Image 1 (cartoon, helix red, strand yellow):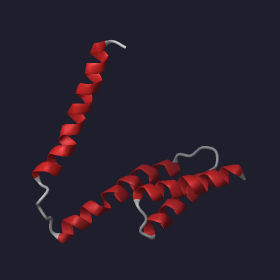
Image 2: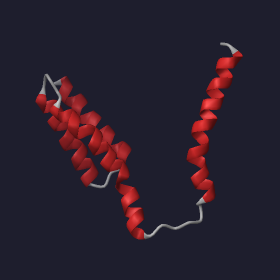
Image 3: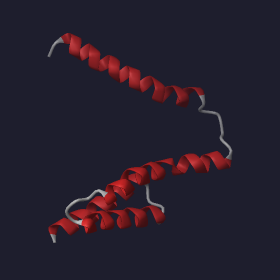
Length: 100
């Protein structure tokens, strides 16, 4: 691998790391009001819903695949699971359904 490519990869990593780390360093002592904490806590679920729900309507072959994936993700989120657990629950249910 050329050294230019390695430097490019390192520079891209630094450019993406700085905007993610800077708010943590600058605002680590700032406490948001409870309302904004609740809003920011629900952003991952809203994003997940925006990604999953349109996909349900565009499934060509097996409509139950989308419906079961949505129901399992919704139930896991409703029970208060972490976003990763919500996604993994949906994947597990759909994997079992695909084996049938």
